[in-house]
Amino acid sequence: MTDFLGKLKGKIDKGLSTVNVKSKDLIEKQKIKMQLSELKAEKKNVLLELGKLTHLIIEVSEGANKITIDETPKSKKSGELKPDKWEQAVLSVLSSICDGKLDSILFENTDKEFKITAKVLSVEVQKSIPKSEQKGQNLQWLGRVLGKFGIASRKFSKRINKERETVYEFDKQKTLSALNVVKGSKDKSGKKDQIASYREQIVAKSSEITKLDSKITKLEQQLSQIGT
Image 1 (tube, rainbow, N blue to C red):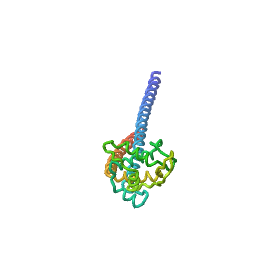
Image 2 (image 1 turned 60 degrees about the vertical axis):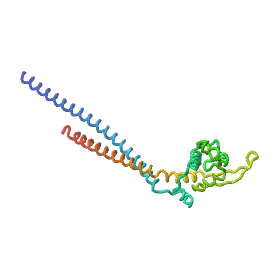
Image 3 (image 1 turned 180 degrees about the vertical axis):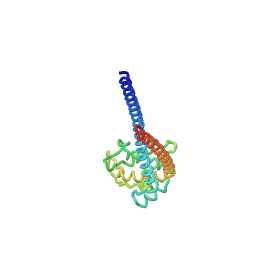
Image 4 (image 1 turned 30 degrees about the vertical axis):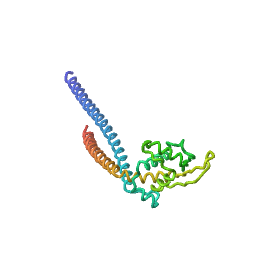
């Protein structure tokens, strides 16, 4: 009887020991799986960030090296010209209009084009210039600025409120394109710095992915060895 109980106790102890080992292995596996899940999620986020950076650097690089906008002689020359304060004020007002920020001053406005009187455009331009620097530029001067920077517009005369006024009609897309040409000539150095910054970030993200891959590989090896 004593021998039987002794053998029974031995079997129970052995069974409990096996259960304990399996439970310990199971807990360890779950722990590793959780770590793997977290690392893989982190890697996915870094890859997404890397993809965005790659897209941005391509976008900026193409903008810095290639300008395919309204290929007229005037627009080509505009990329080499630097606007003075008055000219920049005209360009800024047109840019704001294209962005939909000055709809209230327009004579007519559609999805593709807008019309504005020369008088209203001139008044809006002067708002950004200190009175001490205002030279009383005439309305013909506006036309010369538009021509200088290759901003195509149709000019016509129309009677408004019983007065004959000059109206400029602008195509929104062509106007934005011409403005971007001028902006591109000023932003070359800024774009180079931006590209350099994106490259540094891409290198850092790539390094981060390499480290995450190393951690994931080690954990997968540990997981495969448990219970073997």
